[in-house]
Amino acid sequence: MGMKKIIIIALIVTVAVGLGVKFWPKHPTTFNVANKTQGQASNKTNTPASTFDKTQYSTTDPSSIWVVVNKQHPLIPKNYVPADLVVPAVPLRVPGNESMQVRQVTAIALQTMFAAAKAQGINLMLSSGYRSFAYQTALYNGYVKTQGQAVADTQSARPGFSEHQTGLAADIEPTSEQCDVDPCFGNLPEGKWLAANAYKYGFIIRYTPGNQAITGYVAEAWHVRYVGTALSNEMRSTGIETLEQFFNISGGPNY
Image 1 (spheres, rainbow, N blue to C red):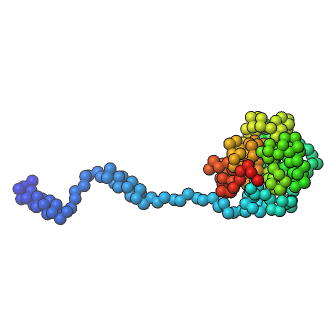
Image 2 (image 1 turned 120 degrees about the vertical axis):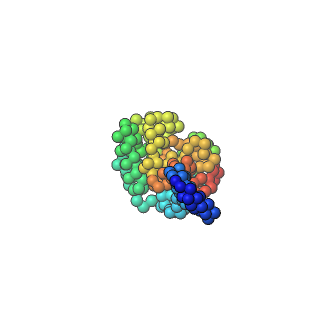
C-alpha cells in the first residue's frame, strides 16, 4: 500500500471517529442476543392472576349450591324443603327412607363419583342425604337425650341449621358398612379415596380436622357437601378447607 493511500485511510478514520461513528466487531452475535433478551424483558408485562367470582351464586338463598349453613346462619325459612329431591341411583343404606333423597344436582354428582370409585375398586354407599326439619328435630333430640346438649351440639345440627336439609349434603360409607359415620372411616381406603377425589365431582369434605372453631363441628370424613366443580376445584387449588373462610362468613361453635 502506498504512502498516499495510508494517509487517505488515516484521514477517513480520524473524521469518522470525530463524527461518533462506531466500528463493531465482525461477528456481533453476543451483543445482538444480549440486546434482544433485554428488549424482551423490558417489554414484558405482568399479567394479573384470574380472580374467582365469589358472587356467582348466593350464600344465603337456601336453593343456592353455595348456601352457607352453620350455627350462625340458619336456613331461611327454617322449614325449607328443596323442590327437586330425587333418589340417586347409588347403593342406599336405608332404601325408602326420607334421608335417601338428595337434590337432583347432588344425585347426578354422586352417581358419577360412585361409578368412578367403583371402577377403582372402591365401593361407596349413601348413608344419609336430605333430612327435613322434622327429621332433624327427632335426630337432634335423640343425641341430646343420650349425650347431653353440649356434646350433641358438636356433632349434630339443631333443626333449621343443618346442611342436610338443603339436599346438598351427603354422608358416605362403604358398602360393607364398616365405620359408618365414624372417625375411623377416614382411615379406610374408601375414606382416603373420598378425601383425595371428592373435589373432582363438585364435593368438598365439609368438616375437616382442626376447623371446629370455624365450622362449629368436629371432623367428619364421611360428610360431603355439593358446591359444584368450579368452587370445589378453586378451594382445592387454594388450600382453603371451609366455606366460612372462603366466603369470609362467620361461623363457630355457638348459636
